[in-house]
Amino acid sequence: MKFVTAKDVNGMFVGLLHEAEDKVLPLGLAEQKLFGTNNCPESMINCLSSGAPFIDYVQTVLSAATDDLFIPLNSVELLAPIPRPSKNIFCVGKNYVDHALELGSKEDIPEDILVFTKAPTTVTGHGKKVPLHSEVTNSLDYEGELAIVIGKQGKGINKEEALDHIFGYTIINDITARDLQFKHNQYFIGKSLDESCPIGPCIVHASAVANPNQLDIVTKVNGEVRQSSNTEQFIFTVETIISELSKGMTLEPGDIISTGTPAGVGSGYKPPRFLKAGDKVEITIEGIGTLENTVGE
View 1 (tube, rainbow, N blue to C red):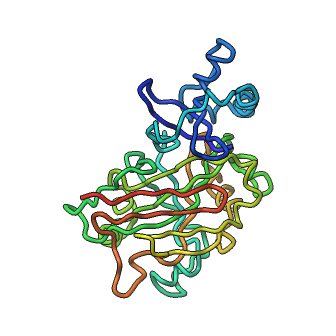
View 2 (cartoon, rainbow, N blue to C red):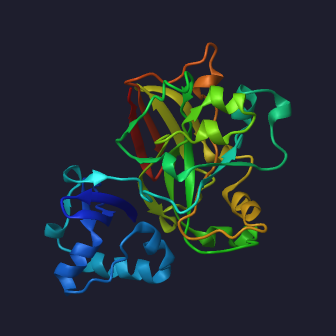
């Protein structure tokens, strides 16, 4: 199952992508037409917080849905699956050896997990224009990443139970102002420019992903492959990331964790190849889809 948050003339809704991915089922509207009831949670975070009963609800609506209840995907505006996270987005840095090396040396390969965050105001959706922010940076960079969406609250989660706390997976472009990142000797400012975190186009339910630590990931800029790897190259696996983050800190439904980017970022080239106005960035992850955005002025 692939879940989206979308908007049409009737407002924002949680929907389910058709298998062909050219249509979407508005869950609440479909429920009303089928059963005359209104039990669909209003937001994706509320859906995740509902736990297993939400999936049972989706299965009930989907099994009764007829083709006429699906609407064309191109007739709606796709938003980020969680348009406004309730917390900062957790991000893992230097989680691929080759990326750590391209930005430094062997000394930069972390022995312990490196975590930073991006502000909720960074979030934007699939197909949206990303501001160039030329007034504050001249080195805007892309980073294609697999992201985890937490579905079950937990603290002190062990690795063996970590995957049970995941609702699903999505794609993030961890856009970064490299000059600001290095100027301030920490990541937050350079990582938190408005609309610098495209997420989407959907959340794929965890049941559809056999092994999140073995997924192909490719980033293209204007059709040129810049990043090509597989999450089997993680230094810290998905299970490790969740376990480490939850030591002394509660993870909650709707929390988003971006797992790091492979080699091939713009700053890793000599000379660097930073983003320019009009550039199109496409990030494809096996089993999830493609997140596409264009850089604006």
